[in-house]
Image 1 (cartoon, protein in one colour):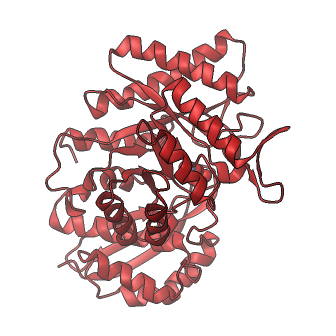
Image 2 (cartoon, rainbow, N blue to C red; image 1 turned 120 degrees about the horizontal axis):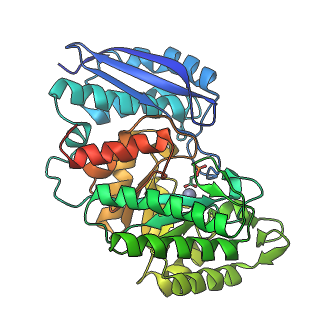
Length: 400
Ligand code: PGA
Ligand code: ZN
């Protein structure tokens, strides 16, 4: 019933106005699934390769589509193995991870459609309980996502005490609005970055004050605990030649960076710190995790790139205690699930994530529920972000 009869690919717009790949999968019984690839700006050195959309589509049409016809969409591993076989490289550099992930997600949705089940159930969430992922909401940011703003890429609201996913989602939106108020009171104008976070021209130190204040105000309003966290995207700050983290005119050695981050965790009671160190420095990650890993999540994004081999290296070294899962970093849903499973077996928390360039595709909301992830990172406002957040609200309401 779920045998694939056709795969079609097209270029659609992403949230930055760039072309990205959208895939439609049809099955013999009329099942239909559609998936679209997101795209990163602060991409990790070890990510699977994204090709220009047109090139990726042409290559996938030539090599992958003929292999997929006749494969069961309900057998996700068979679909993803066919994609791997069609590509023939480790990093999807032949057909592009953008076409691969779009097809992988579209096939899963087509299978769910045939089964008449929500995607999260087809992906393994039949036993979902009341635990929903906590949404991490980007409220202030800079780095590669906004020039002339903070060096730290993302300041993320973390409504850890929210009684429901809906209250968490609205709390993050309220923090986003409160940040605008605090900036306004300080006379700071702010544009928005790629993910809809405020991108004010202020120092990192001032951004901590602003976010701390905004979180306090909303916490008082809603009456449950809201903390905040960071994505430092430190691989982007790290200069290989100078062997230092560069913050404008200032630099920090690896030891100073560890000291700096450990101090921030304690001063602001941070719930979460993603990529606090360079993607090649497992040792420094391990040292920081040893120091503060009992009271905060140290998460590897560019460090692990959703790759089981890199995650295993991290587990062996004691580097980080959580992993960011971005399906397009590795190319298929099966690979993403393998990373989730390895993480879970080793006590690493999982955080399912969007990219800075996104579409209305809401697959990650289902993925987060299906895998019982502790957190989901998908922005706060803006249509391509609210598509995922609203889907989470619907899943919680049994309305998908
Ligand atoms: P990216 O940023 O999608 O531009 O890589 C998001 C992140 O670093 O988590
Ligand atoms: Zn990141």
